[in-house]
Every structure is written in C-alpha cells, then in structure tokens.
Length: 187
Length: 160
Image (cartoon, rainbow over all chains, first blue to last red; front, side):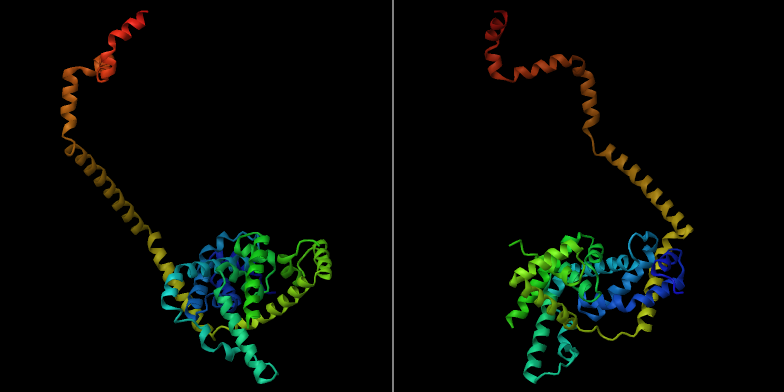
C-alpha cells in the first residue's frame, strides 16, 4: 500500500530522503502547473515551485496533520507565488512582462472546436481575452480562481490555503468571476 | 424577493452548500430570471476558464529534480556552516571580544567627551548648593518680576 502524503511528510521531518523524493514526484507537476498559472513565466514557475519543495523539506516538522498535506503544501506554494508577484510587481511594470509566456501561443494551445472558422476565431479571441483578464486579477482573487478551476478545490480548502474565511473566498470568487464575465460580454 | 445569493452561486454550482442553503438558492433561482442567467453564465465561464489558462510549458522532470536537489544541497551546506561546532565557537568568541572592546571603548569615549562633568561636580560641592535646596527653590520666585513687585501686597494679604 502506498504511504499517505501525511505519513511521507512526517518521514521528511526526520530527514528521510526517500520520502522527500516520493513527495516531490507526487506533487512536482501540480506544483509547477499552479505556480505557472499564477506567475505566467516558465522560469519563475520552476524556481518558485522548487523553492516550495525546499521549504517543505525545511519545515516538514511544523506540519501538525491538522489539515491535509496538500492544503498545507499549497499554502506554502501560493504564499511564495504571492510574495514573488509582490516583489516583482514594479519590475514587471517596467519591463512590460517580456518573459511572459502568455503571449506566445495561447491560440495554438486551444483545442479546435468543430465549428465554422469565423466562430472558431471568435472563440479563440474570447479565450485569449479571458486568459489576459485572469492575469489582471488581483493576486488573491487569481489564486482563488486557480485553486478552484485547476485544482478543483472546495471553498473551505481554498480558505485554508489562503488563510482566510470561507466567506472571503466566496467574495474573491464572485468578484473575480464578475470581472471575467464582463470581459467575455464585451466581446 | 429575497436578497440575490451572488456569492453563493459558485458553491451552489459545485454542490458544496449544506441542504438548507442549497434549497434556499434553488428556490431563489426559480423565482429570479437574472440570477438564473447569471448561474448559467458562471457555469460556462468556469468551463472556459480551465481552457483559457492553457497548459504550462513542457518540463524535463529529471532535470527539474536534479536542479531542486542541487538547490537543496546548497541551502543545507550554507546552513550547515553555522551549525558546525568549531565555527560556532569561533563566532561566539569573536562576538564576545567585539562586545568587550565595544563596551570598553564606549566607557573611554564617555570619559573623554564630557569635560564639564568634573568641573560641575567641584563647583557644586564648593557652593554646597544642594545642601541648601529649599533656598535654591525659592530663588526661582525672584525671577518672576510680578511676584517681586507685589511681595509687600502678598505679605499683607497673607497676614490679613
């Protein structure tokens, strides 16, 4: 039987390298994807998600098992992403997101719907606008949306990751989705 | 009609609401076409969002892990230096020496930069001012000209 994440984390606290390897293998893709969806830069996503694993290794002893390991780890990761965004906000404004991966091939990434070319183009443009609108959301709103949409987290889990109340998460989601809905309606 | 359940719509769509709240939202949606439309739009939007985010760039996971372990090793190495006993003892010793030197030089500095303190002490002792503190206190009254001018009046008033 596979050991649970929580059991592995307890072993990491005792400096069990094999347990750490297993946790990294289990979470590397999810961590990288979430970091990328929040930071929109391949290099930053790699660095920040790796930093989250390093923090996990260092702080495994502080995991008390009161929440799921995934919630605890996502909190580490999301905090690092939010810190990273805060630190790089002015620099990003200055260089206008030169390393931003969003601009490259969003249209190419979309699956082709079986509709006529005009509809298809319109839909692709709408998706592009939607993706850009997500990038413009306030960091915590974006985090809430990503955790909901990508990680399929329930409101109470998002609240634990963002360390706020469920009501606050509902408000974050409502505001974010209202903004995004307006973006779609404009098109 | 009851208040629009704006912030409850996403949890409603995900089926997270407890039965009573779910019932309340469902009843509201039956009566309110605007909220019904909002709910449909939200459902589509949540579906579109997952696609609009796209997929992250392809990662070579072996290289990713190799880099991670390298970073972790570097971090452990940096930290381990502080925890080695000899450097720790040396650092503590150096800190102690610096503290002693700092305190000593501070004392020396305070002696050399306060040339008046000795004079003041000598004058104070010769005049014996502190022994006559009550008198010194009364001298303050003499600085107030109004009081000086009205001393007689004050005295007579006091007697009366």
